[in-house]
Image 1 (tube, rainbow, N blue to C red):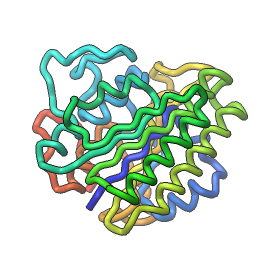
Image 2: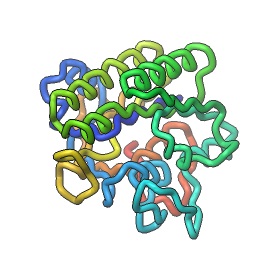
Image 3: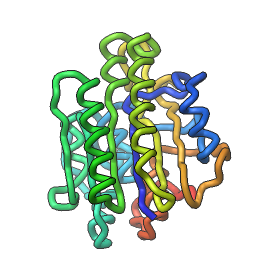
Length: 252
């Protein structure tokens, strides 16, 4: 099995209501619209907790500025590399360079275009091309349009909702090139309210999570899911033992 992990930055669950693509994906996936991220609900701390399965008080990153861990813990990319498997990452927010260690990723693409519509298209196309031509055991794709629109125009604004819709168009384009041996995980790092996020308010802390493919049951609603459960789940799908320090649980 392979894992394609797609993260939509700032995607609130209530922004998915009435979206036909999301409804279809839910029917094909095990899912929850009530997963929890970590506090502070800020992009880099949330990503560090997702990939290292420990809370911010353990990894020590509390803002979007990276600082090395006092007591390092291996992340998902590290254990994939150490298991002689391959990972690729496609993203458009430069600080995500700190979620992996140099030399532990087979392929990296960082989209630097000025606008997020162009960045989203280029990240999506690069992901699709890579899956078609090379593939990898773990692929991480980051879609940042909703978060950018949330900060500029407000969460749940028309511009924000457009970013969510376009992100799901990208997700379905990626789905078209995956096979039955691929588990696709779609989630968010945090939500948002007004033009910001980072608080412990439900609008910031509650995120969606979808798991499509073996061994997940289509249409099954999940309960008690944390963003820290994603790395252990991906590791289990890949047949890799999770580090003892990880605090999340596998969902399989």
